[in-house]
Every structure is written in structure tokens, then in C-alpha cells.
Image (tube, rainbow, N blue to C red; front, side, top):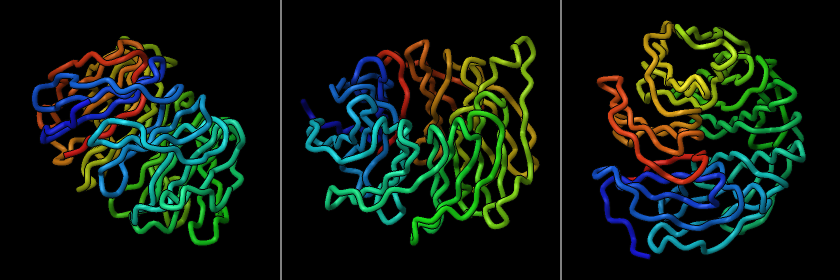
Length: 307
């Protein structure tokens, strides 16, 4: 399979097809579909951007995809049912949320071994890390908490109660806040990273959309800290939020059951995975409008971009 020479490439995990779709972002065309392990969900780039780490959830492992050859070249250990993970800013280790055993597994990606396991709440999912790499945040879907973990000691230092079924945790670039989405609660909790207190809770109202269909999942915040984007699941919208005032300024219509989000490196575009319509929406960030829909595999889940 040929390597991808596009200036910007988008990688999408297809949960039901056991594959990764490779999209040339210049032409908006899928250039390759790569078979991988069972039920791929979370995906993340290695620090040098030569490899893609893939949560092969039903194979209970992390797969390593070489982005030059588009071949799986190895695996990393994890606990049962890895769902999401985050890489330390230094590029090592990898912190993995294992949905079925209530643990965060710490994996040395160079040695390919587990170095620690951190007990957390029931059904761990979201993983966020502070810009300095000192604080890890894991969300537990059933316990409804954001767990703050010291990455030096692997000790849980704080547990912050949020609304039901927290999904994703995302630090602001300055490290001062953590935004936690709650799928069933229908809110985003903005947590002060120093005091570990919720400083604001953001709710959503969309005319003509039932409240129970508004299910926040993926969240991304611009590097300048001015705008936040939240995927609202079956509401088929991405909320645009003024990240200073916490006011929702717009809802962008996208595909069905929008799940995860990824900026292009220049933040001019935002890509969304739409799990029911089996496509990726491309949002023009300046215009705050979806400009393209790209068909991918069945139940697209995770998404990353690479220049």
C-alpha cells in the first residue's frame, strides 16, 4: 500500500469495520482503508508522527500502525477493552483507559511494557493530560467523576463529581482548566485545574431537538483559548462556545451522531466523526459552517490529523 504524501492527512477509526480510513484533506477523498484489530476506537499519533496508536478494544490491546507503509507493525499491552488514551507530552508513556477493569494502564511505548496500573472509577473512558505532563485526568462513565492523577506517583489526588456519563476530558492550552463532557447529563463541566472545583457548567438548548438527544462527547479548544467546540451526539450538531464567557454562540449542523473532533494543525478546519451516517464532516472554523461530508467506514469513532 503506498504511503500518503498529502500535506494534510486525516485518520479515522471505523468501529464496525475494523479499519482505519485515510483521507487526503486537500482533495477530501479517502485514499486508503487499512484493516486493523477488532473494534478500533481511540487513536493517537506518536510523538514523531510516524506511527498511529489504535485502541483495538475487542482485542484488548493497542496496535501500532506505521504511517509510511500503512501496515500494523506491532502491539502494546493494555487492560481489557481499551477505549481512549493520551500520550505524555514528552512522547512516553501512554496512558490507557480500560473500560472493563476500572484501571488506567500506563504503558512504556519504547519498551512495550506496562509500568503501572492506576485504580479509578467504574467504566473509565476520557483521558486528558496537562500541558506540562504532571497531571492526568480520567473520566469514569458510571461513577460520574473526573479523577485527577499525579503522573509522578500514579496516585489519585482528587475526584471531581460531574454530571452523568462523563466522556472526554480536555485541558486548555494554558493548563488552567479541564473541560469535561457529560453525555447523559447533557452538560460540559469546566474545572479549575488548580483548585479542582467546577467553575462553570455549560448547558445546551437547540430549537426542535429533544433535550435527551443532546449528548456532549468530543470537545476541542483552540490554542488561543477563545473558542471551544463540543460534539453533541444524536443532536447532529457541534456547539461553538466562547471559551471566555462560556456562552454558546452557534450550533453547526453535521452528520448523524457526531462523536469525536480533530482540528487541522492550523485550526482552520475541524473534522468530526459521525457514527450513524458513516461519514466525516469538515467544518470551516472561520465561517463556522460544515463545507464537506466524506464517506468512510461503518461507525467512525476516533479521528486525528497529521501534516
